[in-house]
Amino acid sequence: MKCPRPIIEVGRRISEVSVGAVLELLADDPAAGPDLAAWCRMRGQTLLASDPPRFLVRRES
Amino acid sequence: MLADAREAWLGAQQAGWGDPARLHRRGRLAAQALDQAREVVAAAVGARPDEVIFTASGVHASQAAVHGLALGRRRVGSRIVTTAIDHSSVLATAAAAGVHDVVPVDHEGHVDLEQWDVAVGSTGTVAACIQVANHEVGTLQPYAEAAGICQRLEVPLVLDATSALGRTDLSDAAGWSVLTAWAGAFGGPASVGILVIRKHVRWRAPYPTDDYQGGRWPGVPDVPAIYAAAVALDCWLRDGPAVVKRQYDLVDQLRAGIVAHVPDVDVAGDPVRRVPHLLTFSALYVDGETLTLELDKAGFAVASGSACSASSEHPSHVLAAMGALTHGNVRIGLTWTTAAAEISQFLSELPPIVARIRATVGAS
Image (cartoon, chains in turn purple, green):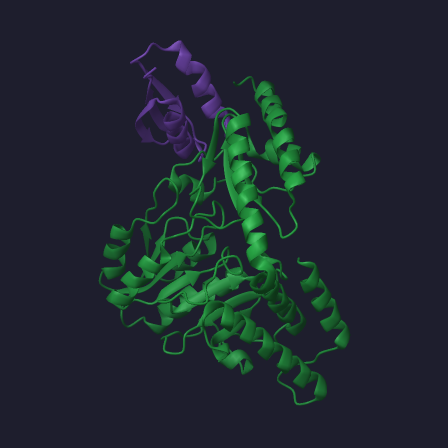
């Protein structure tokens, strides 16, 4: 998946997990790391781990 | 290119100037024009005319600046300090010519001066590089403070003035050893790079040289292009302040309008301490290539730092280092003639384009 597809998927799936739960993303796109961090900042979510290709996001709201 | 610069270029081509190293009349005329061009650049950056060298591009100037200092000071060590958001040509040369030490920047792109101090002060540092202003986001670096640190630690500074020269007064910028710029950034020909090396600096040409330009850049200089570059720079020095004011205000309008009318947008860079003409923003869930092409269809030529639209597979290292969103990225550079009407038109066309692209990918 190439940018911005992984972030679009995260944006879609985050509503499927409950607040406090953790979403795991696997993405080999070089933009996924910086863009997921920026997405978390813009959406008030928490980036728990950024270890390409594996990323963990906790839903805060 | 600025109209005056283009006219000067064509006029110079027609005048039939020769090789400036020759004694014939055409050569002497070319040598005279070259001297004039050196004087214009020297006055703009507070240097001596004989310290000014013209290269074939801004990238060549950066490569020569960084690599030349590394060679000249190789007995001291091999550490080269840059910020994380210097131009890619500076980063690549630092990595190739020595041990590259990268100093991070904050969310708006300002270098961390404490870490800069530590990196520059580390044993074996041969050169440090910083921009006056960033070429993608426009943020002005605290270059006077960074230069002061280099002077205290006796490390030569390469000051990349590419985005600032002409638009920011650099005539009393102090503390640099080598300054680089590019005529293409201020409305001159893209084929002219500027390299200014202070007299006392231990710099060695990282390539074989000849008798041209004091043995610092080889080959017959393209005098008509260099002359046109000087005319462009002179336009900025003469009439620039009014254009700078207009560009600064138009970018303020753009920034406010984009934030107000496009949801989920990340505008990068320092909103106040910046060069007047640059603005970068990213629209969430939008791909940069589609956005760039849609804006082109609407009549706007913009650049993008997104991985899918740039010439590389990787997103802009500038945006990534700042923690800015890299996809859906658009970089706008206002020209000398950009008018308020074009800004309003852009602001009315952008929101529906972004909304349409988001609808196509099912994102909101």
